[in-house]
Image (cartoon, rainbow, N blue to C red):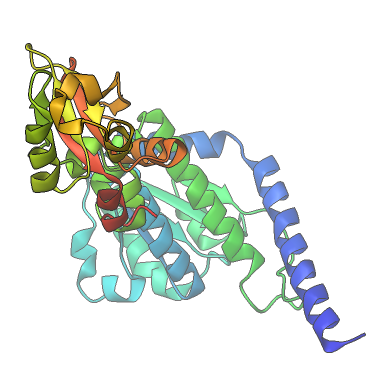
Length: 317
């Protein structure tokens, strides 16, 4: 067997081992999971997530996922908690504490703090009789599964199960709260994800290229040149968008172009979008129609214009 095949075999074994453990985890979920959800929903404060070592890294991720999906959460390092950070954990909070063994000594002060002040405690560990799970108000037990390293010393399968359990809690809470993409964007304003969830109204330009139906094409050409979008919208006497003039329209009417009025050159009933629509939907429309601009229209009246370059600048592609 070549070295490359050996590496691939190892990788496949690790992934299969962890996948099997996740199946066990899914099958093991019971009323305790619902109790954990109820404890979190009943708290007026935050979910304080804590763990030491590899569990600490998982705890940070779970706290971040909870916070970004509508459940206020904060990671507290157990060692730092023993040196003053316990003040971050209040009676309004609920603690979610992670430890594969359930006997991590650095967690002792945090666990004692929750018991002293009657702060609800959700414990996640693999040993039902461990200190953490015996002290917890709700015990979420990880099913028995071998670590992917094969000798049981490297946290792999156990951390994967813990991470998945945290995701399950976060998504269950998110769905209960009917958390929408608009809510999600509130907590993700930056990066590609925030851009994809931006609304057309967030990116569009209010200074639009517009002419009326009766304007001569000399005026339309001037507006196209001044605004720099390569198009102009055409409105009727009531201010409603009834057409658009593009470079294609100009080419089709090149003969005697300046003798025409805007209504004679325009393409009627252009593609439009609402200001409240997701910018991603606007981008998809422009890409599918092979156009570069969309007018945002509300009640038939143009509110702004969105260029495909606005989507590119926002990082959507």
